[in-house]
Amino acid sequence: MRGCQMRLSLWMASLWPGSAWAWRLGRWQGLALAVAFAVVVNGALIATFADSRGLSAVTARTIASIGWVSVLGLWALGLVWLRRDWPRLSAEGSEKADAQTDGLFRQAQHEYLKGHWIEAEILIGSLLARRPADVEATLLLASIQRRSKRWREAKRTLHDLQQMAEEEWLLEIGVELEQIEESESEECEMRSTE
Image (cartoon, rainbow, N blue to C red):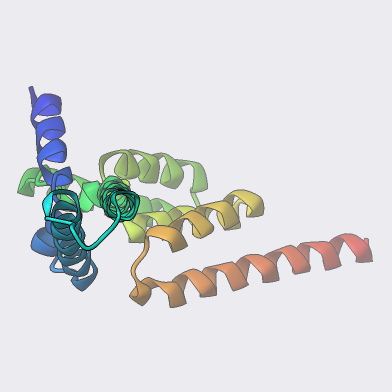
């Protein structure tokens, strides 16, 4: 039942690109996309149905076609944004689920600080299964991967995070990437001295 409601909500939010992003997250980019979509839809409707006596039939059809292709392009962009940000947009995060995920994060931090990388990673994996867009948990995962010398995985995790994270997190992501580079170079130096 919940999956059906989620799909219905996703379908309804996808009808007007940017509207859910602007409304639920208060993002200007979402408002800009919603307004641009409105302008392009109106322009395409006018180009399709307005009297085009001053234009040749081919020119009128070309303008209408460009308008409808633009509508489809903006709609596709809206779907991409919606799919990427759906975990933040959806209302499934009840207080109980938030308390559980916060508890998982605290447990993962505790295991991380004790140096129990496997246990911490398992907890973070459970948390990210519930909240895939959790930036702090993803940063902790990258740090666990770095400390367990899985630098390639850590870099991939951080590069994926850069794509979805807001600007305020880019500094922390950059610091973690630098720490990975330092760890890799220290490992190379230790191997060369042996």
